[in-house]
Amino acid sequence: MNNLVEKLFKLTDNKTNVRTEMLAGLTTFMTMAYILAVNPGILSASGMPKGGIFLATALAAALGSLLMAFFSNYPFVLAPGLGLNAFFSYTVVLTMGYSWQFALLAVFVEGLIFLILSLTPVRRAIFNSIPISLKTAVAVGIGLFITFIALQGAKVIVNNDATLVGMVSFHNSDFHTTGIWALLALIGTVLTAVMVVKKVKAAILLGIFATWFLGIISELVGIYTPNPAAGFFSIVPRFGNYFSDLGNTFSEFGITFGALFNSGSWTHTQGGAVVGQGWSLVTSLDFFVVMFAFFFVDLFDTLGTLIGVSMKGGFLKDGKLSRINGALCADSIATSAGAILGTSTTTTYVESASGVAAGGRTGLTSVGAAGLFLASILLAPIFLAVPSFATAPALMIVGFYMVSSVVKINFSSYGEAIPAFICIAGMPLTYSISDGIMLGVVSYTVINLLTGKRKRVNYVMGILSILFVLKYALM
Image (cartoon, rainbow, N blue to C red):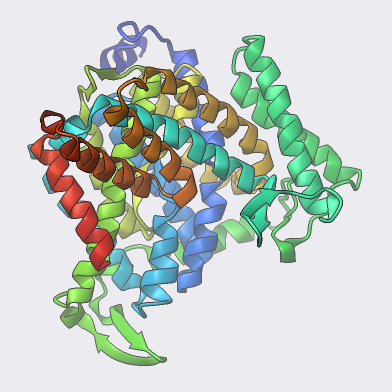
């Protein structure tokens, strides 16, 4: 068995072992297990059943991660992507009026197009054409972005009418919900940081469990008071209706599985009235627009994540990722397979960096995470109870690791450094990896062309810049 694992994943060549890889897989899973609760909450707004979405989410994540492991041997983990699921529900279904089955079809087709491009030099050329300064900026920007997400999820950063965002007020907010949520995240971050400084093994994972444990104690003694109406749920696992809830989950999965192939359910409504139905919708301009929107965001979210995590793991050689075709094919197939299962675009997760930080270097990390996603189907009450304040410290530390790459940017070369800075700032401030890359690519191209540094701008960067401008001008 050990020989087979060694042969498949080349652990010795990558200076790792089974224990380290499994621990890394567990760490990655714990930092992204929130998607098992968040994705059903978002996609159900489109009318899809929550139980079916939950099961589809777990299965798509497991399948995608296994494909990544065996196609590329990189420690990248996949799951339905945030942002794209919101576009699915709130834009395509609730705003444009298309049925969720039709939206799944658009995701399915987008994945097929991705796969075709992944089998050609196109996606590899895009990845390799991005200059090393922007690749580094992407890693740094993602670090800031996931830190921002962590602070928001932990209620440390909240909405502020005057400045858009601000820090939580422990005096003006309800301390037994928002206040203690934020305080536990801050305490957990300090605990995790201390363990990292002390070089404690599995510090990130231990930080998650320690913070969660503190939260459970807070709830049991009454310091934390769940308020489901305000989005604050119990963080103590409950098993009272375990078997009936599990049965409902599988029953609802029968509704979402394969639903995209039911042409009779492809509808377009306006003002509550059906204005289009069936195959005629597939040939419409709107289908292309919807499919292209999924395609465009998925492409650059995936490339951005691969760059950022690869930079952190030391997988880039001369700015190139050696087995990128396998990684891209895995991502593409997972997207189409996820649509069949009943979820929006499945993509590579930036939280994979937490597993890399824990020592993950091969696809065995992805296999470990995939196994846990499958196990989560049977242990849903536990995994769904992991609160965002418990994963926030892990994401904060991962953000720190990724931001440390900023020293690799040559700030004395303004033509390289200014676009890199724009890219870094763009990701957290636009709340989008793809938007940050867009700002970096376009500014790099324009600044260097206008300053006479045309040799820095290859034809792929030029084409990307034009496409980015057209995308934001027309959509």
